[in-house]
Length: 123
Image (cartoon, rainbow, N blue to C red; front, side, top):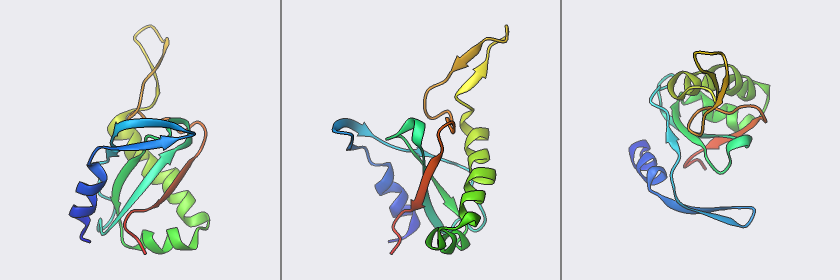
């Protein structure tokens, strides 16, 4: 399936279940930034905001990193890809004009508990 069809399929609202609780009309946040050639579609799910997650187009080389499941993919997600998400959607803890913390909801990035990832439409 081509990547545009995968994105359309992924962005179609659906019901998902997390720990027995259904979440209706659930859709991920699509990251506008395209990493590298954009030939691979992946999901990134911060553990603190499950079942909410992001999808983004990443370089074809990321497919092999995901398969290898080593430090290289963790570092790419943690250091580079989460920064794109944070730049686009903001961080879950922001400060108001008085310096008070404001806790933003998803799609603001909450990376406080770690994250998981994978390829969408991969083999």
